[in-house]
Image (cartoon, rainbow, N blue to C red; front, side, top):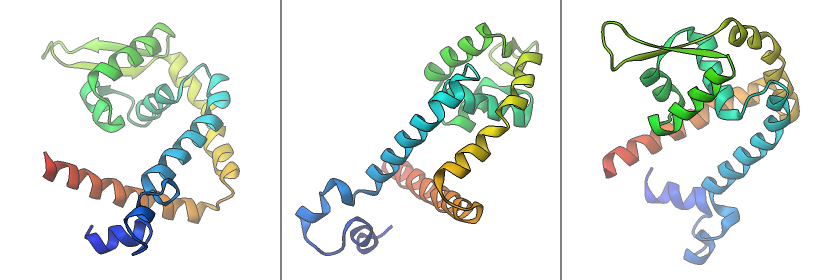
Length: 163
């Protein structure tokens, strides 16, 4: 993104002080929205016995059935130091099984147990509940999702160029 686009996004040519206002920061708007999602999800997921990161892991596993820990980490954008304790808790709850590969001991696969698969049926109401809570229609959320995907890709690219 060029400087003029950044300026337009963060408050126009209103001066450097204006650009530093919290309410002008897109990153803060995303942070606030994320915290609002967390507050909405917390009691819903509590009924399922899951935290939000555990729910995301289960979503990926329900979609793919079996993933390596590395694949799951990439899908969730989590490092192994964060993912390993999360998977240990899911395994202790009887929702997933981790198995070391026989052909490559460094590779560990994760799959839902029967209980983990059964939890998917109870979780089916969550997306509809969240959608209705946003006040957005499905088209608006699809457009927002697409925009956030583009934003994430642009920021990933910028971060890669800086490292």
